[in-house]
Length: 623
View 1 (tube, rainbow, N blue to C red):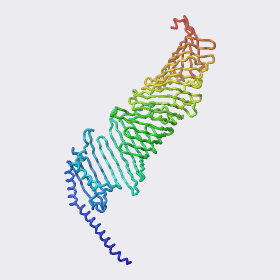
View 2 (view 1 turned 60 degrees about the vertical axis):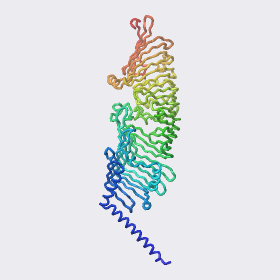
View 3 (view 1 turned 90 degrees about the vertical axis):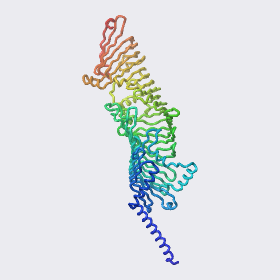
View 4 (view 1 turned 30 degrees about the vertical axis):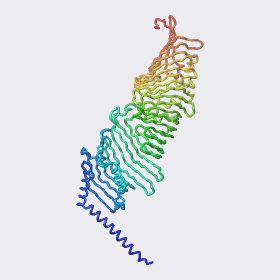
């Protein structure tokens, strides 16, 4: 076949295409010609101002039929109070070409740059400042015509986005300032869809019970992927949450207090999420990788993973795992019921078994600096239930890896919304500390060691009782079973006045074994004590006198005491210590006379070297 037979049709097609492109180019040039531009802008603004009762301004409209794009530059729209509600440096739309000739507009992409928006909604009852725009474009025909027009409108306009770009977005919504550097949407031919938000943040002032608090939420990168198979993946990097109540931190000039302060948070986090299902009212997701830390507070989560299924009423969490620097925790299941104003119910939650290995040093900086050296691992098992104001600890079991220390207990925390009324109560059902673990536990704390020999002499300890942590006060009570006898006690720590006070009683403690005094046997007595725990006061005394003893006083009533083969009853004793020297006396009171024993010591580790001086007093003198 002659090749020349194809040349003529091809030339005709080529000339036709070139003429068509040339025509489009000419039309584009005419549309974008200055005088024509002015008329187009004037007509567009007039049409908009006829539709909406406010000022509309457009600097320039550009139409490119070759690239199938329309752009508007310098757009401004005022609200009814003559405030600049919307400002745009430039907005453009990419359209599909061929449907234009059939009277149909299909939006395939767009770009917005330099958006500034002012959104004002004074209250729930009052309309937002943009409501007039929605009202202006509502159809006002009767129901039949409206339905038909809506149907025709849907035919004339459609969205088939393949790309969208936004840059330099600034939105002010009431007290919220929202900024976004860049956002994009892309849909590939394969069907995969990508959404990316970069460098965004929102700032606002919140009103709390303690005053105004500045808050900031920011993101470095948020990317979402919807694959052609329906899988939804979300990655969040450099998420940041900050609070500032413009007051000193709670631990300012308080070295014993941790850095945790809700008024001064600076949390940075990364997350990877698989969205199994998401709708307007519910979500089902898996956190496959999580990381969060606060550099000032010291709270650090190296890894956080869990599954969550939630709606407006409740959330169900499974397979929650938390890894800090050394601590690892696992929660099999947890349920959260959200507050419901209509039903008048508040927040509640509950968990099944929480298990893990805890290193208390991991929480020392935010909550308790005294635990900074507590590196002995503790295994734990417990369940939690609670509300916004209470937290209950059920089936609590804490133990060391060698099982030399085991503690079973239950507890409750109340009034969590008020620091001064906050209380923590624990019932210790059973606690056992075997030889070899007591000194390890004490060594985890930076404290001075007193009476360690007496502690070792007690042998295996078994305790049951309770304790309360209150506002600037702790109270401990219970019964201590030891290898040298049993002790009942109750003592309190006053953190405001800085004193340790309490009562101790026993009926069978063998004092000779406890204090290495060979001939001293069992004792039946009760004693009250008051020990100075103020660092400032004790430091002053030690600088003056030095010494290795606690500073305080003890008064005791000895109902029965065995020394060698003799029993002594109705003894009354007092001890006063200034830190360097402890002096005391014991009186054995008769009908008319009192046998007095004065004693002194400088070191509890050397009780056998205690100085003793007996004496005799007449009762009248003793009184």
